[in-house]
Image (cartoon, rainbow, N blue to C red; front, top):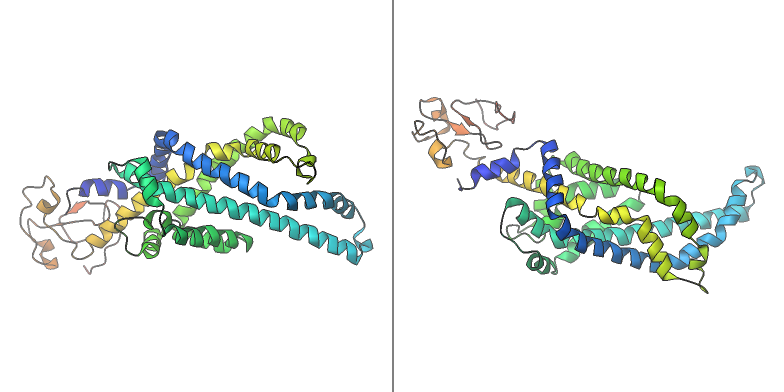
Length: 347
């Protein structure tokens, strides 16, 4: 057993609440390091999406008064032209929403990839430098992560969200494994680490976004009056277009998202480390389960006899460690009395 076994057990043997707690502490400790790169990527995505949708948004503004009149009109009196106008408006709105979501998701995935390896090493206590890990993360494999998670989640969101939820829950750890030194099949490894933890991953997403949503709601209670006075539709008019004010307005509107940009990846790092180490322990000790206490460097010096076979577990001086939590047991059991995990051998 490697010398780091007790430390690995410490990472793997955590409840979901402990994972979140570690993630929040990690967020606090690394906030100043992360806010500049992650905030910058969010700002770039905000600029790009406003450049892409400015004309579309202006068309939407032009149609909006007519749509308001149609909504106040007797439905039985609507003509084919009215229905066509409503269809055009709906298509335009969906298209604007898709472009906004697509650009935002692509840059979010890109930003997480570029800091993921640094955060992983930082979390487990390895010596690491931000800029060296950042440069190392920029490689050809990054394209596949963007295609699977960035493009996949964006298109899935447009298709009633179910495909994007599945992709997210199964493969979000790809942002870590694609650049991991010990991962030869990063997509498969990401899926294996996430196996049986779908709802924990979704839970991390929900918790981080719920916190941001609540803070954003409180923020807008105070700022919306100012934003209403600041906003001018003429900013989008091609003859008087003002991208500076458009971007500034959008930045103020989404300032809470920018401030808390590092939260999700910090919580996700905590969960990833826990699940990854849990998987490694499970694989390493699946066959055989039984080892002498000395091989773990434990204080049970009196339990010194070597275990020759699985049947030897019932002999005096023998025993084994739970591959999930590290608890030592002198006798064969179906379930670990400490963590409750089931073993895959016959009693």
